[in-house]
Image (cartoon, rainbow, N blue to C red; front, side, top):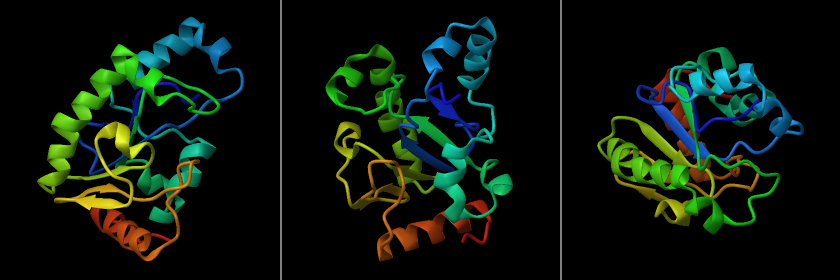
Length: 174
């Protein structure tokens, strides 16, 4: 289950990716269950490690073993809105939860990255976060060109970013 705005202790993770982890079949049915709602609440506290889920594993495998990566990387969802395809960023940004997330990212998370406190990587919809795709900003704030599914493109810039991430989280990478 991928619900929730973020994964991993967002307050302390040395690396944060913000993107949309998508939608899984049956997610809306599971979301109605009390146990699932309880898990969402716990996840939204930002204290959980990345889950052992194929989506997260596939997108972080370039940074080393998942056991190491999941302890030091957080994922901030670009909105509390899950869909098979994100066709309307405007609609997503109209949601109060999305506005709060974007405001917090811009006022807190980006500032920490610009001061070098952590690495922050925009993996989707850079313009909606006030960034430009393909650009690096002061400190460690990045908006690399990515593919729609949330993978870094293979390029020299991407390799340098992977190296920086691996160095920050203390892994060898792949």
